[in-house]
Image 1 (cartoon, rainbow, N blue to C red):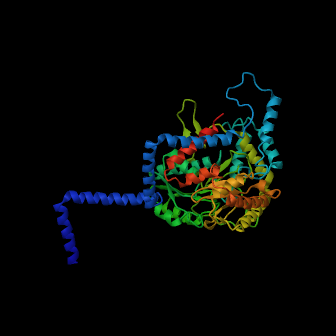
Image 2: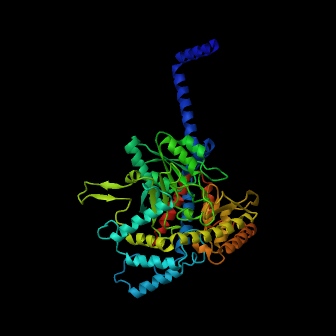
Image 3: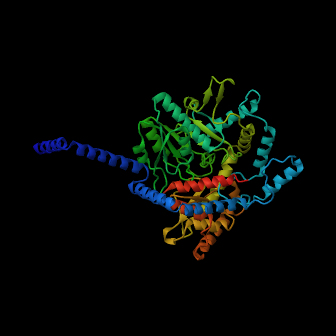
Length: 537
């Protein structure tokens, strides 16, 4: 004890003798601690140092050789423009015609243009189109025809659509085992559903806890719509890592990330990239103990997950049966087989839902209140969603789930049998994600380009590099799984025997390059150029 007191006394004398040095050392120590804490939130100290040095180097390069950098960026933009604009032939319309096109000619033109889009009809895409046409297509078309002019903003004028929307929500609540208090609204898609949930948590935390600097915790695998929601809503998005083998969110990292400002935790059921399900019960336990919300993003799981048990495929608990789950999103325009622009956001109780609403009682134009982002909404979309759900029923959804999972298992087994490929994670529903093995010395991005030469357009992933197929109803007809596996093997052989530089101009090369760039602002520039290209008439 005397020795300890002696050391303290010596330290005190040193501080009194050189106070400025002591202050400097204290500030330096505090800065180091702050840097380490920040670096951990950004993926680690080495990653931050590497990125900082890269940014500094690129900044110098941009200053010294700005013309070269701009030229390379323009090459990428031109490649993107050629990719999209080169596939469209015929006259382009940049000015509204003085005289309108005849109806018969216009309809014929649209039918001919649509007929050219054969890739999805050949089952050579991932996701995108979830139903297989047939009778469901007819139900959607006739629903649009009947309710084309309807708008749920005016329920007195369009009472049938109001009733349909309420019933779609309630049917979904029942499918996901909500209590009598559970409720929700329809939205335009998964992004709006997730954004509305985060908006509800923000306003709830502000009103009940006084939190003005809210934080949302999500895994690296959670959908980018949560980053967008936090950006739009002025919240801090805290990203935690996923397990490198299972690709599930790191539950211990979530526990460490929770603070007094945490308003919600996000769990995926299932994740977009690898199609795996997070440990929802474990996340719910954290949410209950820390008094924050737990949002389950089931946009991709959609109306497929609820019917997997009846189809013979067990599903771990993920919905309102799990105490602590306070909201859940489900895209009815995916495995609900409704047309695009249809999703549902559900809450465990109405109290939380009210914080989603936007109400402006003092507007000159009368009292203005909407459940989500939009004011006017297409009632035809609601009617078509209701129509498809009523047409298929539980038996129809179970039958379609069975067919989809049979194809999933066939593809999963086929990929596992290819020595050059390895599956990422454990597929929980319709997504099979895979990459090339380290031993193969092959780039999955080059394999993707070789596959594209055979007519396929699957989805590319990064961090880690990968490629996935999201199986839908269009893959359950014919021999889609067999053709994919055959073409995968051929693509691998193509890449293995390719001449040097053969794939340097492919779409995959852009992904491969982008993944390796630490300065994400450069990747941002590439993405902005891509978006600009989409609006080139």
